[in-house]
Amino acid sequence: MSFQYQWLKAPIRWVKQKNLHITLLFIGQASDEEIGKMSEVIHEIARHHKPFSLELNKIQLQPNASQPNLLWARAEDNSAFSNLYKDLEHTLREEKLYFPNTASPRKQIPHITLGRIQKWQWKQIEIEERPEIDQSFSLKIPVNEIALFESKLHRQGPEHFILETAKLNSR
Image 1 (tube, rainbow, N blue to C red):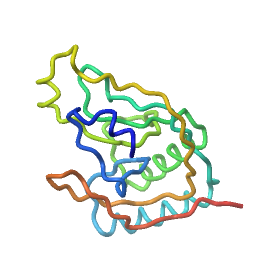
Image 2 (spheres, rainbow, N blue to C red):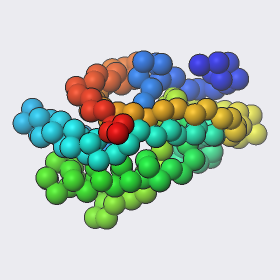
Image 3 (tube, one colour):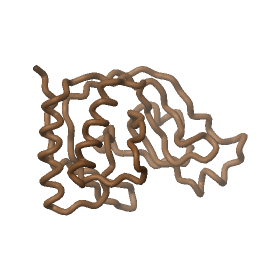
Image 4 (spheres, rainbow, N blue to C red):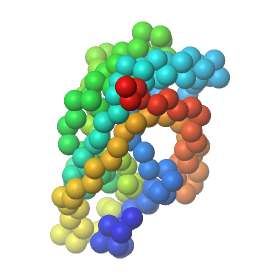
């Protein structure tokens, strides 16, 4: 990830390349039985959606530059992504497998988390000395499957393990 060199001195804990992914939904804790049901759901949802591409176009701090938590590679709005998100979110709610903090579905912004800001170090940097991170770029990535991940938290950051994948319907 060559863009890291631009911000070597920034207090960012970079996500390992093998852990880079686009999150549709964050589920939280789930039992083995719930994971089995989720696996069935993602296979069913995948059959109703075709592969598509996302155009990553901006690297920026989130939720904002003054109090950032994350560094994102953000994608342009994409109707195929939005439809996949809505379908998955709705089905998992109906199956009582997803309990978001909000009563109604929210718009999901397609993105890849590139790093986590080390807040206490960020706050130590004078405001005018903080790196400006808001860069345009262009990278098209194919989306051809849904994966169900398990995350294990470690001091160095989370590590993700694929539990199940379902190919999107290419017909």
